[in-house]
Amino acid sequence: MTLTAPGKALRAVFESEETALMPFGSLPIHAAMAQHAGFGAFQLSGGMSAWWQGISDVGWLTLTEVVDHAKRTARAADIPVYCDADTGFGAPINVQRTVAEFIDAGVGGIHIEDQREPKKSGGVAGIELVSDAEAIGRLNAAVDARDKHDEDFVIVARTDGYGAAGGGVDEAIRRAQLYKAETGADVIFFEGMHTWEQAELALKETPGPAYAVSVGLIGRKTVAEMTALGQAIQPVPFVLPGIHEVWRLLADVKESGEATPFAEYLDRMGADAGTDYDVGWGAMFGRPSTDYVRETEEKYLPGSAQRDYDNNAHVGEHY
Image (cartoon, rainbow, N blue to C red; front, side, top):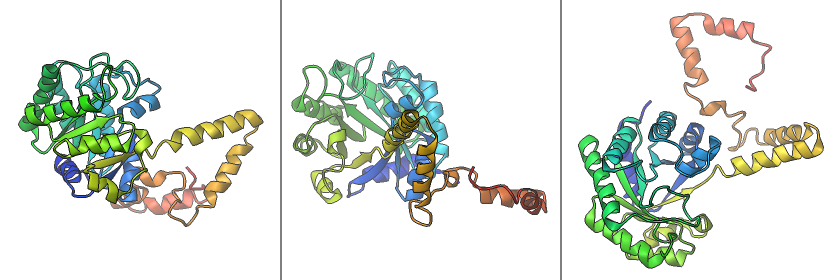
């Protein structure tokens, strides 16, 4: 099944009265995992998607590369996908193409930042912002493309006003208020604030929906507390263990000079059998499902399922 109105579904998440926890990952399988776990939307990280492809988060990937990855991710799940669109990939005309391409890819919404090119990862030193006029023009170009192609598509205005050179909480709030007043952006995204006190002030001073993100803030307040502050969503980078634990296993194998750490990991994995943590080797997240493949084979090639079973009875299901 394919989500027929991803923008509408994502818009409902942002406009919900309660802060929505949004799994934050980098691969199509991560979107499938988020859906299987019961979440209502998935956020595709720009930075983490680049890292998983062996590339730094410096805006090196082109629009077509980013959209192609987003399209595969959106196809992997039936929940809306929310994507990082960096600075919109160029001048206003390019921003309009960016919006159209993400809509065609089946994505529910994107965020566009007010950084100057070459852009940098959020929170790092050396970030510079475009002028107010350029940021407003960038966003309004995106909004016009949204209204032309899909009015439900969500445009999120991200401001790096907090972490930019010469910036701070006041600059982030000023920019957020400006974007709300002068553009048709649907949501404000504050990048990189260091404390919940700063985020609370920004959210209080900005018409919603809005949200603030910093790794150090995640999980430090309950959903009820964030809802009271006006936090629209809370991205949760659940794939971080996919980097740390993989590195730990690799380092252990190298240190020991043996493959035994992998066997030990398999033993720990086997202990999850029959619990909510049991996903085997992850085949359950793939599409089309094994059951659907078998049903299709039997429909068009009667008797094939039984022949497969007879021919492969000795083969395990590990892979």
